[in-house]
Image: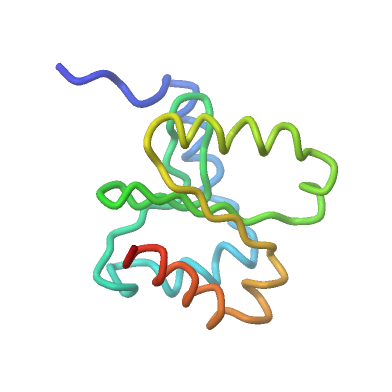
Length: 117
């Protein structure tokens, strides 16, 4: 039996977060869902270990995190999360909410280019 990717608490937290997406998450999800970007399947709020990244593409091992202003004060925590995901073999992209809301085409271009690497 394969190892569990998280704990029951992690699964519960992911479900809670999926119920209250930010405006930036809603906008990006509209472009990622259903394989709309390069045919890649993304998941929202997919718990991995004790962390719940905003978006995760399992097969290409790509995580996308959207950061609001609160992330200006939690750089150490964000670095810890990124290091954990990288230790699991994931590439991590971080975007500011404002970039997603105001320049979605540039964000999608970066994601698409990363998936093609």
